[in-house]
Image 1 (cartoon, rainbow, N blue to C red):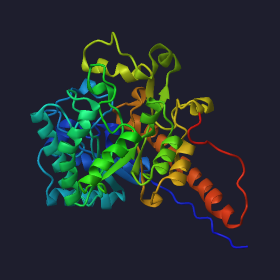
Image 2: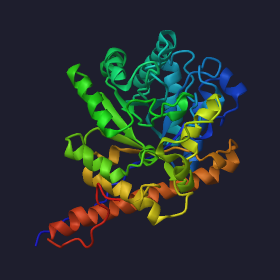
Image 3: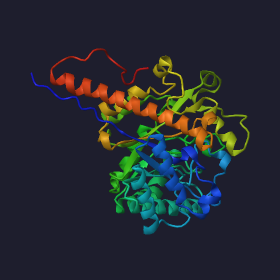
Image 4: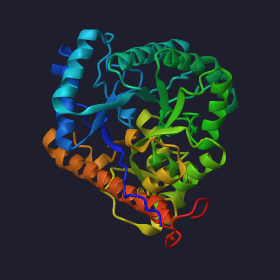
Length: 402
């Protein structure tokens, strides 16, 4: 009887630097922009990370979105008020070498289809700076949103994507980069009743957008950085999403993962449904997020209690099955795939290094162990046992069933 050796393959564990936005005090980093990156590499080593996802954003003095509207925190850890040059890149790479911590990709999360032409052009110019920085830092990708024009319908935005976003992908292709889209619907970007303000919010939309990209020769650039918290927000589950992509021939689309959960408040859903609170929210930018926060709260992985019933109802992330399904259903080079921990659990978003360190380190350790467990299960169930024609017991979670 032939045998196959037991060879589990693990993903790379990373952390988004927006987890601690002010690791380096503002007065220090504004005067010495690359100090923040150096200190984040050192902090990531203490956290036990293999790599970081380096957050870039418009400087607070230049941003069009007020801080109180940022339920999904961003950070300009990589300060690009001035373009990155070779000397700055060498300094950052020296910090990578000194700490042994790598770079997953560069991240700039903004609305690239903003309705206002001047604002949209400003964001596009900044994204091009991010692209150029990625080339100098020798990373393979940039992660961000697509966005949506608030003045257009969703179908009109599909045409707008072809007009405005495809040329941006062409710029990425010219630099040898892929563009990894996170699928958050961004309900808090507007204080009107719109819930989906990032048109790349779900697999059906990813496929529609990818087909546009294929027509223009940039299909290989458009990829997804999947975040299960947003699937839970919309009542979906990871295994079904991955199965759908496989069934449709698009299992190649997902190229990386954000590790962030979502804990649904059943009472909030009873009050408002999955569309969230749509009336009497107030009119400020922070009030816009009530569309989301009234029905759920972000989870820092490992901090929410295990709830099997919530898993079955798609009201929380089943992390073990998430990692199993990724291996079983997607087309991944597992050992080159990044698991990037985000931290958006409000009560634990302390912006104090010493207080945050054990919280974030514990969450990352949990994430690593979950991935290791899933890798071991996959190797046993999909490789070792089949090689000896030994059946696998049980059924496990199945797609399209709750």
